[in-house]
Amino acid sequence: MKKYFQFEELGTNYRREIMGGVTTFLAMAYILFVNPAVLALLDIEELPAGVTRMDPEAVFVATALAAAVGTLIMGLVAKYPIALAPGMGLNAFFAYTVVLTWGIPWETALAGVLASGVIFMILTLTGVREKVINAIPNNLKLAVGAGIGLFIAFIGLTNVGIIESDPDTYLALGDLTNPYTLLAIFGVVATVILLTLGLKGGVFYGMIATAVAGMLVGLIDPPTGASDVVSTVPSLEPTFGAAFENFGEIFTIQMLIVIMTFLFVDFFDTGGTLVAVATQGGFMKDGKLPRANKALFSDSSATVAGSILGTSTTTSYIESTTGVSAGARTGFASVVTAALFLLALFFSPLLGVVTAEVTAPALIIVGILMAANLRHVEWDKFEIAVPAFFTLLAMPLTYSIATGIAVGFIFYPITMIVKGRGKEIHPVMYVLFVIFILYFIFIPE
Image (cartoon, rainbow, N blue to C red; front, side, top):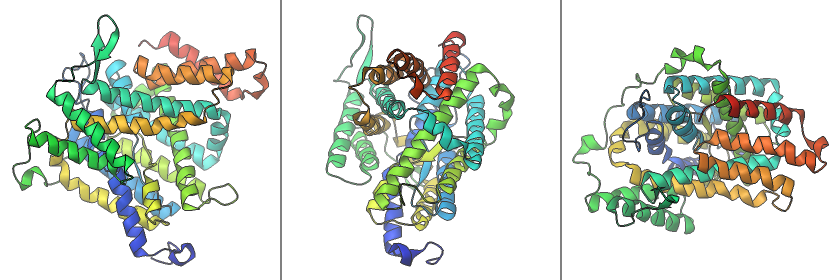
């Protein structure tokens, strides 16, 4: 084992790798409870006609298994201490835009995730992926990441009534005397304090603190016995293989936009995460990441597996940097993290105490972390600021990640050409310009 993971060459040992793997798991364990809540639309009491809800327990199992499979492949094949799980942002796009707003059956949405994973895998194996990534301006990539952060935070704020609709001003501050809203605010404050103190896994511990506080004040029903904490693994049947049921329905312009959005966000989320973790761990050589294709293949394989199991796009997690900071340097740490995700399968009863008030702080804080990308956007160049700003603003205001991307990608060629920088625009951007124009013509919101 030591030889396979090159412990001696990388100056590590079992203790450091195990600690790193455990640290990474604790930092991202929140996804086990947030993802089922998001994909099952648990915060929406009454769904529109024709919209059905995913089974939250099946999604919990799919989330844990997808994370375990993806992380294990990353550890054994790419040999990096990078963990994977269903991505924040893409799960919100899946649930709130594709299913809730557009009325696309969640089975068809899973088929779109499967298609994006297969395409991602092909692009990775053929080397096309890098060319496509290079065609997208870095400023737009940054704006998309930050915009998704604002969108996620907005969902968290509205789910618990901190922000609510208003007939006069459209949006307004909610009723802060509502005990459930106050519990969510407590969760935000607690999580902020934990992260400010530098506690690894602060988001997860913040959820625990919020749940405990909710039980103490009678807002959340506490577990009454061991069976309310640990149980057998729930059935995966409600979601397993559902992606194949409606696969023939993905060949529409609407689903093309869905698949492109899954691809686009996963492309750059994965790339950015790999570079960030590799830089912190000192894995980069001459500015390049060794075994990059294996790492990308691990990511795309996880998305394919996750879609079949019953969850949205699985991607590399930036929380892996916490494990690296704790000493992880090899794929053995990923093996440890994967094992912990499998162990978590037996704690599904805890879904009952993870209410909207418990998950909202996680959504809000993750949104803050994702918005950090804004500092790198070239705001002093108006031709860049316009598409970046519209991308950023449109996502939360239209409640759609796809719409935000579309607006930004339409304005970018316009401002660049007018500025006289048309030669800097890659041909792929013109293709996307046309596609997103068609998006607004043919896709009803």
